[in-house]
Image (cartoon, rainbow, N blue to C red; front, side, top):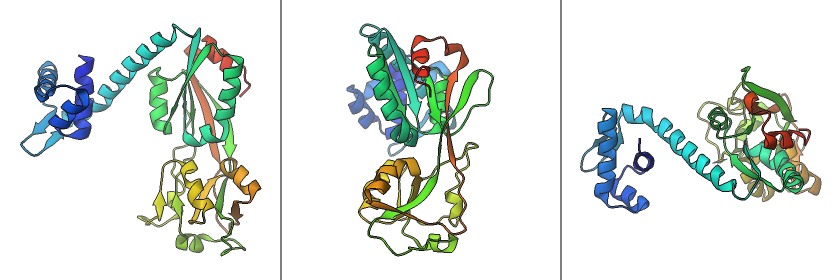
Length: 287
């Protein structure tokens, strides 16, 4: 299947507009139409329902979309690796969740680059499920995830354990004696979720169903400016806010009767790749 057709299919699925898709790919609209028609002819399936106002993926199109993204991603990864081979002796592709990168990985990568300057490093930051899929597809060499893999094909080891703490700005002295679960519901809460090793989204369970949060984001680091300026409260990993707590720009709020699980991260790699030179180099850092 033509890679440009797949890229066009992915863009059209996102934009739902033939004209905008053509503009993004720097082609005329008829080229987009022809690429989609050829895909549908090759597959023997209708991928889009079209009328004058709407472009909607069919169920067959919805089923194809994640596979199309994976094919394009693999092609682009292969091309990038071939290009890097001209300048570096080896390469390492790391996938990591935001919190692990911000709290632990960045200084490790700095040390790695100093020790192995001829190994190129590519880091992809995402969510655990997405990263694990990329690891299975060999797009990633090593993955740092909150969710482990239980398979004899993969090496999966504990990496870091983090404790969640409730923090707010230094001038917020409303609850010096701490908060219980009832008080928690009344806070101006800035929401970023974390998962346990079984994939449970436990912070959401502390609040009533459909609880309206003042602010939501999928990266805890992005909450720091709001908290520092006194805008609400949030549970964040202690390692993420250690510096801010030591500097006194954030304060920790005691908890009364609220029990939180620890956040365990894992490093995971395919056992068949353990002899790869770049992975040996990385593991020599003594994770």
